[in-house]
Length: 237
Image 1 (cartoon, one colour):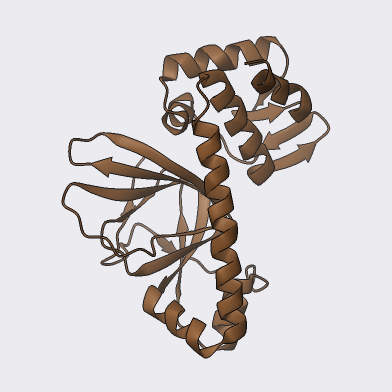
Image 2 (spheres, one colour):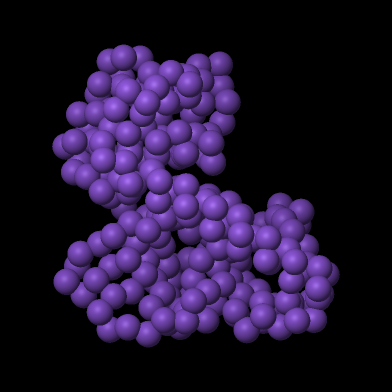
């Protein structure tokens, strides 16, 4: 699958500017921007498309879908920092460092709004209600980041992977007769990257979960039959 890039300097033509403004008209961010005539851009990303930012003065708002946020060093060493989903933001910190950069990889089809961070600061100054909204958003994002850190801090790879599956089910799952199905397909390599393990280890653990009938596969998507029973795999580790 082709990997396309969007960096902080310009958006490239391999990305489609979204025409779904009506679909997202209920989004609180876009409602505020539209009602106050604040300029922003909408982008539709395909699976594995990447946003690069090493000196960002823009705020990226996830309207739909999920991203893996990774710190990439000059040595090619990579550290997964977070898993972000609808309503989360990234890219707002000023950063200039020749030793590393940050990468946001889309999981499945993803839609983001992009706005200059200076515009956000000005909006906080001019609109007290938006200032409070943004403050509460930052608190919520900090809590989610802490939860993700808890996931990857498990000593057991099984506990990390199970916790990740439960998080994905909560954030990107759809209830079905058979359980909770993830809205997108995830590869073993991608799961291994997030939990900091090897693809072989992830495949082995998933095989055990399949054999125990705690999960199953439906059209390359993971189905979690019982989050309660699956969570016991964490407690028993």
